[in-house]
Image (cartoon, rainbow, N blue to C red; front, side, top):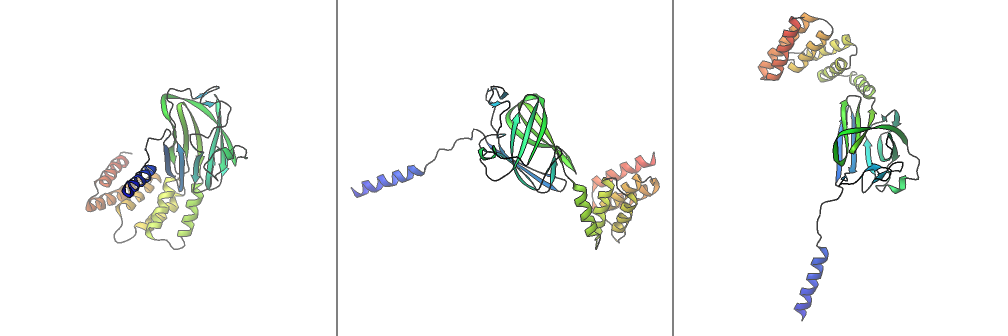
Length: 279
């Protein structure tokens, strides 16, 4: 009898902990993207169309009604630095995104994030509220999708799309101020690599090329200059219109790259030399 009772107890305990695992109806997703010097993370759920009418007066997402922008919980977006979204300023931190779709445009509200549930945000005043015109997709998107596109050093586009409808938000970041502050700080006691980074940024950002050349000269004025740094020197000289000096620098970079076994830089320098010789 005791053995029978023990078996029954173990059977009940074992079955009480057994769980059937099934796929989530709206799988969770995370988007992580660095834009300039800013890290952006989006955490959300991805419901499917499943032969339903999505955006409509009587759709799954009714026009004019506030929506959690996904499923299960409020969509969460996190910025590691201050940004602007469609011109509206947002401090570094996490925000819940709730939207109000209509046929022509969406109102996109950002609330300081304090809980995953979306209901508590509805009665609150958003930290920022922006409008975005809708666009008709050229394809049908089965699962709700948030993505980050058109990356630049000072911004990107946040795309929210589902079914055949999408909206885009412009994220703007003051990367230049952060880089300039970093350069000014590093120049108090710069290394060769600091000079190279500063020169490269000035070249890419179309800033003072005389200052960029001064820095890259300091970076490469060593016994064993790096071929990629000398390559940058050639590009700066070319942008300044100093063709022959650019060719000389590219030739040096190509020879250094050959010695290092880097065929990519050999090809790039050879192409540049030919292009500048024919100008």
